[in-house]
Amino acid sequence: MLEIEMENWYQLDEQDRIIEVSPHFDRFSSENGGPADLSRQVIGRSLWDFVKGDTLKMLLQLTLQRAQQGVVCLKMRCDAPHQLRLLEMLVTPDRRVGFTPLKVEQRLPGPDPKGAIEPITMCAWCNTFETEQGWLPLEQASAFLPLLYDSQREISHGMCPPCEESFDTGTPAHLEEGFRH
Ligand SMILES: [Zn+2]
Image 1: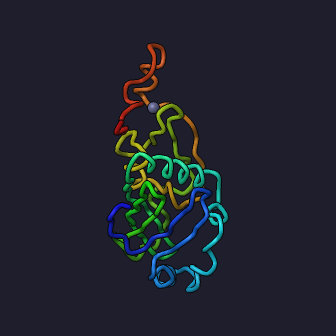
Image 2: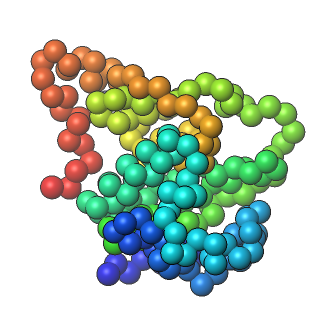
């Protein structure tokens, strides 16, 4: 068991069922615009009952897979209609998913500056995402893209420049980046 401080979390079993949540889970939910009895609604049910959209499902599955190798820590945007929120998400190898709010700001009136329609491009070979900071793995890209909260956003599959360059010559070297073994 890893000793990691997480205030808000849910615990998954091997079948992706939510089996336990943190003591202040309901308070966190109601403070963030969710139902005040969320724990009662989710415990015993599959995580996938609450995940809307294939894209979001795919990204969460990828995150859970990565966490088998070691703790995954990523920043994610989790905006609400009137608020911009930046959360830190931690996923442990024993399948506990935690959230810590880092920044919350009132949203300024006006259109979403990132544009609400453009699809996100993911490299189909190395699973990096195209961002304004270049092609980044999920852990870093989630700070720039609405990857883990906007279930409407489509993902188009493409190829990043390093994969493209090495496609003819063999396996791209950066495919093994990030592995600990
Ligand atoms: Zn690539």
